Structure formats: structure tokens, C-alpha cells
Image 1 (cartoon, rainbow, N blue to C red):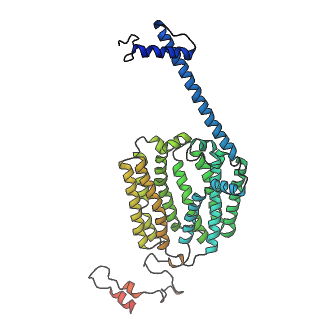
Image 2 (image 1 turned 90 degrees about the vertical axis):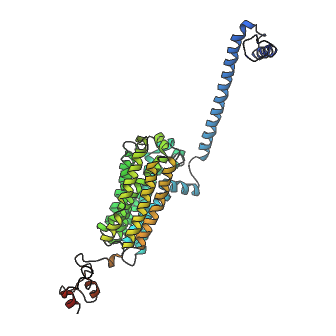
Image 3 (image 1 turned 180 degrees about the vertical axis):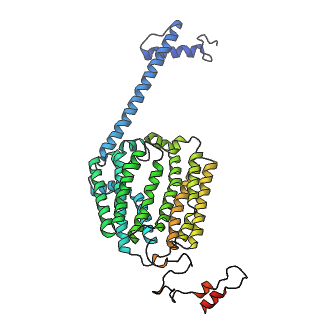
Length: 415
């Protein structure tokens, strides 16, 4: 049949039945043809209003459910809950990594026999200082943490602990950590621990919402724990201490920049200023990661030059740093979340392997005294002549160049 109503494809009989049904729903008599348009408008308005009310009810129900869930959690009161909250405030896993780097610095700076008790106290004090810094960071960033998927489940955004109690925990761990380091290590180590808390909580944390350079300041914070370990073992800071500290500093850039690219939108919601948010293509971020991976390459040679480690570490460190630079290059060639994850995974492998290699190939401090002019041990007898026990003729019998005769003075001396 012809379509009299103008609704293409709908038979007249069916169309009329729909109008009569609509009239019954709206409590009105069946409309005439001239009133069809007005009735259709009223149907649309009623339907839209009903849909809006339904959506509002669903949203209100979800909000009430979330509020009920949050209020059901409330403040932590049971011992197990309190322990969990304190671990989360301290960022226990991150603090454990900090302790590992400090312990590595202690071992590398030790004699052949490592003072295990002193190393344990140094590790304990370092963990307490790290726990304090991490807690202060979360106290400062409560509102930012509520906006980020990565951080909205932390204790303070969920109301599991009050800010006052979190501050008390931060103050207590700071006092405990610095006191332990001062008592069982030395003043230098305690001063480094206290300074690192201030640098992390008072400089790095506020800077995160102000400038992208916060990442570089954070990398400096991560470089201090190895110095703390070295200072605790040697009671001093000499050039050898810079090897592991510099490695930690340069390593953190590709590690955190890749993470910042993966979580770019999360950082944007949190209101943080990151290089990744100013880099539309990802090339600047990747180039920075490449540079800092390359900066790791000379450190193995410096460790050998300063008699901190054997040549084996030089080669292994160079290989590990080259692999990290290659992962950064993959990210540079095709910036994406997938390639950023490749770089992030490579960084997670690089650090433990790097530190393990340094520990395995370290030169104990009581065996690393070498005279720069001769290459042999620098210990001398009272008269100024080299000790006979340390004199090795075979080292002085080497010709200066292949196939040239040994100098006569060396032959006489060896006889």
C-alpha cells in the first residue's frame, strides 16, 4: 500500500496502529494526521526525559556504592592493616632497591673481608631514610594521587591513614634512619641520608608540578645511596665512589622516561610536568634515553682506571650499556607504548646485572693500592726501595715493543 504518512517503508495500517498505541501511552486520543508531528515531538521528549532519569539513577547508585566502599574501608585499625598501610607509605619495594644500591656501594668500597654487621646497620638506616622520603612525598601529593590510576589506591587518597599520622611516621623513620647511620656508620653517611630526604621531599616533589627537570633531580636522589654505602665502608668519599653513583644516575633517565611515556595520560591527569607531555612525537624523550644510556659506557673504564674493578667488569658493563642503548634506539625509531615497554624492561634487567658484575669483579680496597708510575704495588720499604716481597722481575722484563731487546738496566736490576 501507499505510504500516506510520509514515513517511507511503513504501511498505513501499521503506522496507524503505532499512533493509537502512542496515544494510549500518553493518555491522549488517537491523533489526526495533522497532529502527527506534534505527537512525535512529545514522544521524543518523554523518551529522552526517561532515559536521562535512568542514567542519573545509575550514576547515583554507582557513586553511592563507591562511597559506601570507601567508608567501609575507613582508617586502618587492625595490626595487619596498619602494617600494610605503613609498607605502602614507605614504598617498600622501591626502598628495597635503594637499600640494594647502598649495600652494593658498601661492598665495593670494602676490604676483602666485608663488615657484615656494619653493612646491615647501614642498610637499615638507608631503608628508614627512604621510607621517610617516600612518605613525605605521598603526604604532599594526596590530591594529585587521587587523579591518577597508578596512585589513587594509595593509603592517603583512600583515607586509610590521616595526614597527621603519616607525618609522624615520616618523622619517626627519618630520626631512626639518621640516628642509626650516625651511630653505626659515620657522620658523612648520616649527613647524606638526611640530605637525601630533604632533596627528595623538599625539592624533587614540589618540582614535579612546576618543571620537567624534576626527573633529573630525582635521578640525583637515586645516585646518593651508593655514596652512602661507600662512605659507611671507607669513612670517606673518593673518586671510586662515583662509579656506581653515576651509573645509578644515568640509568634512571631511560628507566623513568620510558615509564613516563607509558603513563603519559596518567601524569597529565595528575598535573605533573614531564618531558613526555611536551613531546608529541616521542623523539625527544627517546633521544634523551639514548644519550644517558651512552653516558654509561665510560664508567667501566673509569672503574678499571681507579682500581675499583677488574677489566672483566669494563667489558661486561660496556656490553650491558650497549644493550640498553639499543633498546632506547628501538624506542627512538618507533615511539610507542610497545617500544617504551621494551626500553623499560631492558632497564629492569640492566641494573641488577650491572651491579652484580661490579660486585663479582670488584678489587678489594686493601688490594687496590697501585703506583701510577710503574703499575706495581706502591708499598715501599723504609729506605724508599720497593719491597722484595712485592718486586716482580717478570713485570720489568717485558720489552717496550715487540722484538726489541730488553733494556740493559732492567737485566741488571732483575739479577
